[in-house]
Length: 284
Image 1: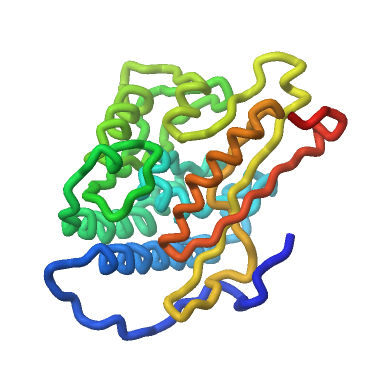
Image 2: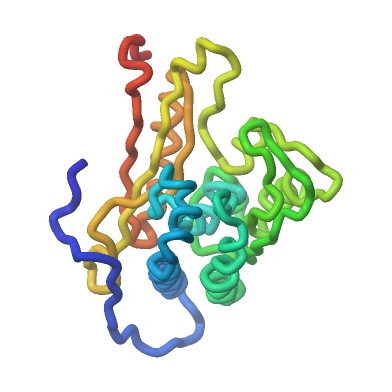
């Protein structure tokens, strides 16, 4: 994987005078301030992760099965802001005790900062702005991060209890889906198809042995620039990931085009796909 030539040796920030606030707040002001909050989120995340003990890091990585860079959520927050996906599940399946601290120290301050911007945005909603396939921004929003308290499971996850879900109270598709599928205390199961809809995954899990041989793991990797235009990381890091089947690869291309709207927040994105299991199959 080839990285951009301009890089730093790790997460960095740039002190720059952006001027005083003024009224009315323009769309460009909102975009600039949102980008700044997402940069702060990235720095909070990397600082929080770097402060883990070796034992804590081992739990977060599920005994080394995951990289800690796969536990970053700034990309998922940006995707929800852009209404590319109705919600994002925030979960450290390896250690949900640490998850509660992460939500308190990292996510909740970010939500407060972002919601102040959502309240300041007066752009009237339009048909396009309420379309889940639209990445129009800015728009009014009110993010909420709620704990899943019910005894909820899915075919691939034994329990979602203790995980958190981030969604937009002002987006009907988002709030209604989350309340019906994840936060209903009487609900005990949620299907993989329902999760794919709520998390806006373009593919599906295999349902038979033939499909098992055509799984393609897909990752959207990202890097963010600071206010000086320098990379905040010296590597590409996971923004979101999912799996598709070989016959669904064309859906990833369309999905990726939508998600590249994240560039509005100075986040560059590239896609990686592991096709090692389907090398002997014809490409559609």
